[in-house]
Each structure stands twice: as C-alpha cells, then as structure tokens.
Length: 125
Image (tube, rainbow, N blue to C red; front, top):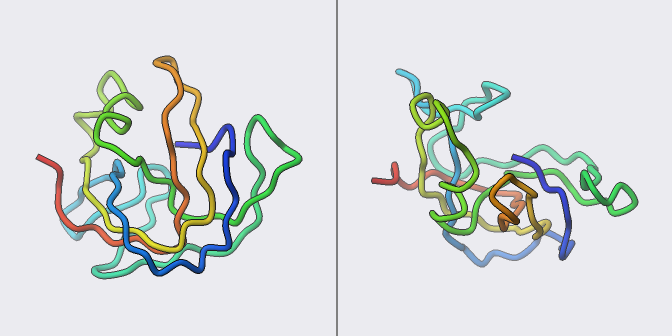
C-alpha cells in the first residue's frame, strides 16, 4: 500500500486512539508486514522515523509510519486476485497520525492514514 496523494500532514503526537484495518501475513509465530516480513509485536508497535515523499506529490514530505485503511470497505477494495488467499485482514488500533491521504487504485481513490503507533486487535471476520 502506498500514499499517492497527501491531504494532510500532522505531527504524530496525538494520543487519540482510532480504529483501522491492515493486510498482514499470518504465520505460525505471528503477524508480519506484507512486503518487508517485519514481525508485529504483541501490543503497540512503533514505526521507524524516516522522511518520505508522496508518490504523486514528491515535493510534499511526511514521516514514515504504518499505512492503514480507515474502513473495511477501503481495505477490501485495495487487493484482488490471490492476495486474499495469502494475507489476512486485521482490525487495528492506531494513534499518532502522521498523514492522511489517498492511494490511487484501479477501483478509485482509497483513503489511507499513516500512523506512528499501531496494535493488532483481532482478525477481521
């Protein structure tokens, strides 16, 4: 998942906890990021701090974080094909929003939030 267009860049200091969704790889010893094979710990996970630029707005920068979908519908629009067979959709809590924006997909714009902290609550049923 990527952040193609940024609507808002924030400091990431808010302690407000929100609900979102993320596709992960479920393995015998836990959940991993889909592409990097980073294992998510139990409890709160903190993202590394790296400055990034939006795909379609290279002059706008934001701090890296966990890219999450704001709704189940957005998460389900993101992937097609065998992706659903190899990945698990999880419901997460997040805080410390760093950016809000959109991913441009074949199915239109999908709202994405980038957060400094995330924890997996449960698998989405």
